Length: 94
Image (tube, rainbow, N blue to C red; front, side):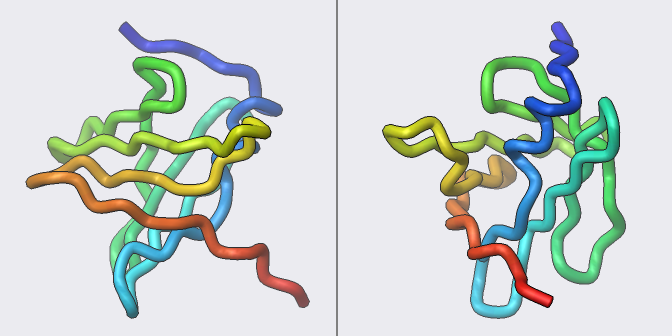
């Protein structure tokens, strides 16, 4: 089952998440598509199959987003060969 959340809902997931000291998960919302990439890898689309849960179709992996009590996305858990939690980083300022 694949869900199709609206673009404004997908933007809630966009951001940078610290998986390890030199490894980030970067999540981008592009219209009706959500993409994710790990440092040094290509960006791949992920598909929403449950609330706050997205699966890859190129590898056996998933992303489960965590929210705080205010409903803001604060972390993502990479579900691949176990679970690895990555807290959200503050947005970069330019």
